[in-house]
Image 1: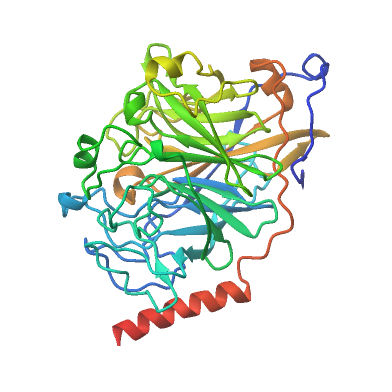
Image 2: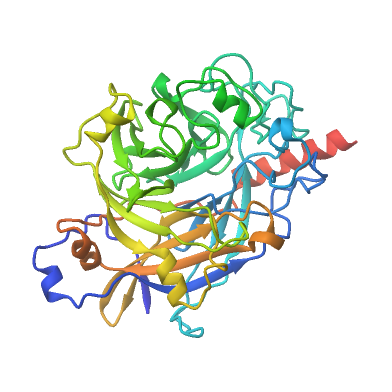
Length: 471
């Protein structure tokens, strides 16, 4: 086996499906990374709930390919599944961060799977602003300095204004993608929803993208349920911009709302919004997505760009390992917005329904994991991170790779460790489920190694700040 880069301009020719042996996407490897150890943030001490500030915990809320076998894994707002203060949704002053991990495949069979890999943590990058942030009634992170103000998971770390204020310190990261030059990281969240650009090496916020005002909640609360009941428009609390994609040319970000906006039916509603954002101008467009499969409406966890208009969306139930129940529904579905109606000026479920794009099943994750020997109770409840990786070549045939990660809510004893599931697929697999579907991959240029002088200096600054605070 040899590894090759993703083909940036790979196009599906009309005769491919007829001349290639058709095989559905298949599971080829599973990797495990312990969630109980420390990350590489350099932070010390404990959070308000007694958990270590450097607990690795969960890292599968978002997953992004960064070239080669390097991926960025995204934790959400920190450990808040255990009850300690319901007024703030049990959140803590966990500093927002992403991890760089190596997920290199080896063509060494393990059981029934043809590949093996051992995920390796390479670095942890903390996210911060060079200008002051509003922490509201929350304590500011002790690692803050006069020039670095860290984002935090505390739900009460906000000031006046609507949920779109970029001065707010609270951040609940859920989606992550890498710029094509490898130097920037784009992150979407649920509190705003915010879409921020960060320097990949240092973690400094370098740009913010403004969404239409209809996405923001006007009346804020540290308690999600109270915030929902206090608003008639905007994102549903804890159901904001869960997914984020980047088109192969790197020019457009594609955000995906986990549930419909309040004015579109709210949580449990049928029509989510896809938001495209020009990375240079910030110009946005919106498209409606029909999340109903069978007779049920599902929330969505991630979106991946096949090309400029076709995307894979991860839809799932909340059942399985971590929920104490049996999983029943985890699917990747293909949607195409080519020629779709821009719904930026349309509101309400009925109006959105007339413009919503239907989907086609691409990969049934639930059935694939059952076939691999998992029971329904062993399938993670929260499969949330998804990323394409580099292509693999087997017997002269090229396969694309797809990585799926779980969010264990920092509760390894309940939801298990960090798991990475790798699938392979071909262009013919796409054409088989929707004629004309193509895969262009992502054009990521040579990227800096995780250990650069900029990252080292940033890390030393954090450790020094922590030591000064403790002294």
